[in-house]
Image (cartoon, rainbow, N blue to C red):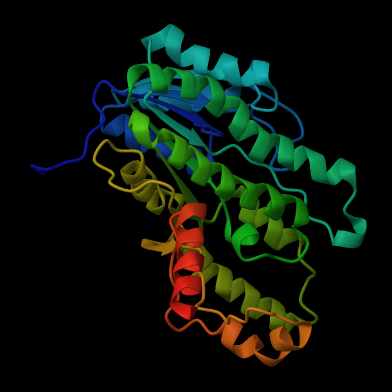
Length: 320
């Protein structure tokens, strides 16, 4: 392939890289020349326990295939852990070009059962964890005038899902985090995007297993057939090419979100309807014009708060 996208001489840090999606990202980037820090604490999908084995095994697999990789088992849940992860890359290779914030856990519960003890750990790993690792990486990227950051969001946050107020909150927080990084990185050749993967991983299996069982054997048979026919097509390896492109030097976009699974990729975006205007807006007018307010025809996709303000002021001027 004459125009193969490669990552020679670049250093990638991947959190949660010891298995599932993160491991596929690490393997693909390494196969294209990247030197990879495989970070993973080796815990369960719910965050219990720890082990260095997952990170070490994934790094060893890369080295066995001729690539360069080191293992790291620091936790993303503290500033010290985040710094230590980036220091692993700096100690090994002296730079950080790519950061993929992929570490995550789950802990589903109906909202009436959602306690602070269930809520906070997911924010610690997904949202605060991304912050703790990105901050020291950001400093390096600014100094070298180059960087690519990829955060992991989810349809469970962007669209909402029952029993996932903790997970959804953290994942949607990462959307705002990504957008701000993109805006602040624009003058420093740092691009930040997000991916919402759909893959048959430990997390998906945990969610399926935790769901209420079908009412009868026939319904269970349908679920089993669904798993065999469709869910097994959600190979994590098919998410990796999108992640690799979004972290490549040639990636032209920043501040965007892509959803991908089973070989399909598309873009999520936040749109703004044309809406309704009244200089003396009343409660009743909101009620009476709700359909117009919600009408998606002619929507726009503002690039940021300034774009939305410009649209608002343009409308006000047109109404004068």
